[in-house]
Length: 449
Image (tube, rainbow, N blue to C red):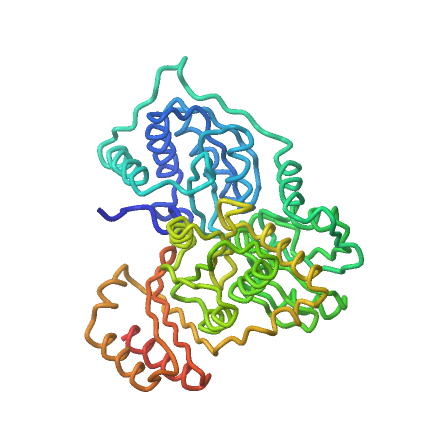
């Protein structure tokens, strides 16, 4: 049975347009609260990023949970991985994150975590959707009696607790003293977290894009727009730059030369460091979008590599299936299950910084052992919800066959619909950049038509 509302990363869309409305959020809170309460849930933690709409949805979800008889703990603006961690720390039974991650301010989303810090399983999501349908279409939302309503409390020391957790990941015999780091918080949830973590570990920190106003989250900054970070690294002659996205679950680096170090390269650095220390468990999980250069570099080190479907939930599934610990995506979602149950940008950055210090090499030197193959990614925005129909069309299939014929054994093609936006992503990877661009545009043209 397919999901009706939940995508690969919860529910997400434009604020004010169904399903991202206050009414939907309240009924989703009620449906989730009812399902979770049936399994013994007594309290749910709610965190959010810095979008102005977060206040509205926080109140709506809070009302729905309370109506279902579930207590609520509010922690305010906080990274997505922090909510997963703090739900366990504060002995909550589940966590809710109100965020659209790297999307613009006019989008928002809602996702749930279990008390173990993992996303809800398929059965729970389907059960929630069934109740939600009843509430939306048959006015079936019910409220427990007054004496059973959930109570609400606000937690004030959540940021400090999460900062200490992040610092605990970093080796106690190392320090960032003498290192100059530029940090771009994307005017998002980590604006009061990430700079303090690096400072308290000894680094000189230049903090940029750390003044959220409710609408400037991800606005030409952060992990999806690295120009300002590259400029700042060069101007301040920093050792490196670190960029998070709006909810701080993804991370990108810029080396001292201003060159971008992406998620695939970060996985290479972490796998290489673990291999050398003898701590690597099994291999590495990437996705269908992971650069072929990563696979080849890992192969040279005799490190196994597997590809999961795109989306960190599928990477986690593959990691659990194999018993491996390290995985992620080129976009900067990095998972290391020894340290966090979900993608955590700050934690991943500390593991990279530790690898830099232990190797006594610069970030640029450390990543030089992996050669990325030219990869072209085109996002084709759709005007209707017909991605499956387009992908199954004869014209698109023929365009893919033609591209694969041209590429031969020197490249690969991947088409997939986005799980969070009305997009079809066209990816072409080969040894020839011009060929990749030409064939990607050829396929994208077929998708648009």
